[in-house]
Length: 420
Length: 127
Image (cartoon, rainbow over all chains, first blue to last red; front, side):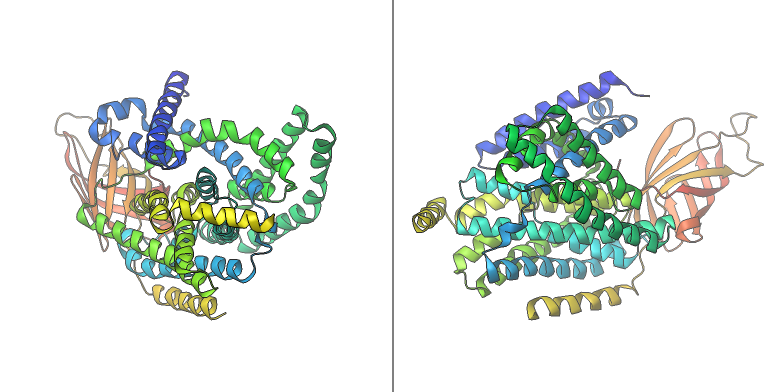
């Protein structure tokens, strides 16, 4: 039974800790979202549950977590819509060879290394309820993701969105995200079909029909919202409610098809009209409550499922180190190598690799899906969460070291002068 | 083409090589436990309560929550078809979709009792 007092208390504690840790992380030049992710871990068994198990058990009793999870999932549905909304395929145009090569290699290299790592960790951290193919593909997808929203935030906070490297990183991250989510959708179908006994053709056929309907029917209706916005410079509450309902229906359709709730929300955002004013308006409408209230709940729920260093002994730390090294080598190394091959200077290519290595929040979303469908074990989940935190944390200091802000700003000025 | 094509071929090789790998038997999930019909608690004439198991597994390591009136948690190890934990030792049998445990369970106040457990849901997740 729902204990409203407990739920509200949990939300209040989570929000306070998230804001405080986020603030402290900003003080050390980290994005706020990095602090919020760490706050979630601090509230879980990795710290609070370890230091004060009594307080942890009283504040977050297992029976109460389903409500927290439900709220965080609603937040994720809206957040994935926002991520899709912020994606703009036209951003790839004009970056030609460098963008195409870098984005492809930045997916393929970590994907293959992830698969290779699976050969070692599958017999040690998985079980026979999961096929090697499902496990290896998931590891590959989880290694190859780039946190498009966190990357955009880091670039914005450093004033680098309009730099050559910044725009290239955003374009590549957009391609990576779309590809990563397509691969993940395939993995979810693969795993759910195996477990649920649902015929594969029903899920695959239904998914193809759903995508075609979204692209060729729903996408043609959506510009009506943009026209209304242009006419009145705002959307009425009724129209906003219709957009929310469309997002929810799309999310329910993909969940019903056996893919996952979040794919539908993401695709709805991706096919929305992309004029900058309209996108900015919708982002403003949807972002605040999601980012301030609901995402910290997701981070906390993730933290409560994460047991960094708890159990497993020294071996777990060795597996963690292996996964982190492989993830960085594949993503940072692969992107840097491809960017260099396409003609960028070493310093610029290195900075691009560092940016592409930011996994952040998107990684946590994918890992939670993996844990929910059972393709990764709780220990593997904790290891990958640690990897996500490390790769996100290292972005800002490493970028400052490889490509100091003064050099990047000079490049931005150069681009502005060229445009003028 | 080379930078993408070669790794993709490599990945296909990895997937092929991985098919021969064997991971520990899966025991994750919620289990219902049937105790030996003749079991009697040493402390009294009543039959012991029907306990339930909830297992969370990572490779050969597992955490078992045993509910028999009150909850108890303990660490367990899977080696081949053998499951060993504090008060429990059992043999794992059946395919992942219809897995069973058979062995002995040390219930508080009852001593070792033979049991058979059937997995109800292979529920995954860390919480």
